[in-house]
Amino acid sequence: MDYISTRGSAPTLDFEGVTLAGLASDGGLYLPAEWPSFSREEIAAMAGLPYHELAARIMTPFVGDSLTQDELLDLCRQAYGRFAHDAVTPLAQLDERNWLLELFHGPTLAFKDVALQLLGLLFETFLTRRKSNLTIVGATSGDTGSAAIDAVAGREGVDIFMLHPNGRVSDVQRRQMTTVRAPNVYNIAIDGSFDDAQAMVKRMFADESMTSRFNIGAVNSINWARLMAQVVYYFASAVQLGAPHRQVAFSVPTGNFGDVFAGYVAARMGLPIAQLIVATNVNDILHRALSSGDYSTGNVTPTAAPSMDIQVSSNFERLLFDVGGRDGLALAEQMHAFEATKAMQLTNAQREGASGLFTSARADADDMARAIRWAHEHAAQTIDPHTAIGLHAAQQSDLDPAIPIVTLATAHPAKFRDAVERATGSRPVLPSRIGDLFAREEAYTELSGDYNAVRDFVSEHASPAA
Ligand SMILES: Cc1ncc(COP(=O)(O)O)c(C=O)c1O
Ligand SMILES: N[C@@H](CCOP(=O)(O)O)C(=O)O
Image (cartoon, rainbow, N blue to C red; front, side, top):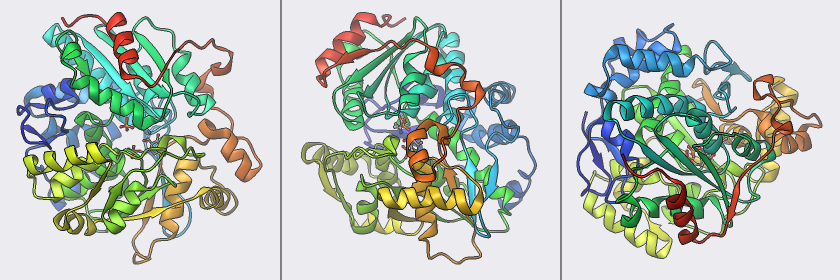
């Protein structure tokens, strides 16, 4: 499988190449040159497969020659062996039409584990093969950071520098990152928002003074391998609910547009998805873009769903590329203008291309609290604030009621205990696999929001390219 950049001028790479490259050298994001697809018969035959076998089957066309079938299956078995539920991503029914897809049974209690447990193993496999090393630079609003650190802590050949916005993640999220003691893990709290952290990461990929000395890599969803692994649970849940003989809709709490883009990929691969509902909090740039074409940023408002306090949504670029006719050079121009002005209007082709599958909704603090209470009182389920935003959007849907709606439950409620307690009166308990999180000592470096400070810190501590 060949991968091309959304901005049209980076070299074409294979799967191993895109996994290690992260961001494309022209500033774009990599995508498969064409979408593989499964027939109805092939999708029907996925029913009942163990998760790791399903994962390997779905990922095979994307991986191409970079891994043998046996290698891929073995990595999937290892990655999903650490989940606390046999089904890995089980479904729970809320009412006649609403379902939750529980994506929080991994080691760090959020959906990020599904992809990052695999990505850690992919890095190790490819770096060993190349006798090379990687300096991972990542940005997190709380969940990617802990999942990525868990996946690479102590691994040979990898250093990880994880930037989080100081004071804007939950206490559980912060501790899951800052209490991991491994010589290759560096936590950095920066003054600013997740968007500021993400911008610094992208800038480092374009900074020759860094790329000439270090092999910079990505664990954020700018890395194609992240999204590829997330496609699997769309198939797993839809097949359980009757696909390919029945259509299914998904409501996806959205920030960086990675998770919902994985749903779009599943649809492109032949999964009968009736609708993808993009659910945002009050940082609603994606809701505005999809409903009116206005993709312009404002200030980031801190909310009780902090992982979605994002305005510049990296993977939206992948959608604009695919639905807008895959014209990389035109998109590069549009994105450069956006980077300069922080505002852009979607083209007619982009709006029309998105409108067939996507719809969107926005939830404010009251909507979110109401959805947490509803799930607690009417379905005996405790859900986290991000999931609640997805559920709120699902409950607003005007789709045919015969079509089931699956809300992606993206985090365990105990990660956001204060918000859940405020809404329900009961405090969720951390699962025992989290261990003595609050007894462990924290360590992190505080830096200003200045790129040069972060660059200097990374170049002082990272291992030179091997
Ligand atoms: C718990 C949780 N829900 C939802 C999201 C949004 O996912 P995405 O960024 O892939 O849109 C995130 C992080 O981004 C998250 O951590
Ligand atoms: N919510 C995320 C933000 C980063 O998103 P990513 O999916 O691109 O890694 C987080 O928790 O860090």
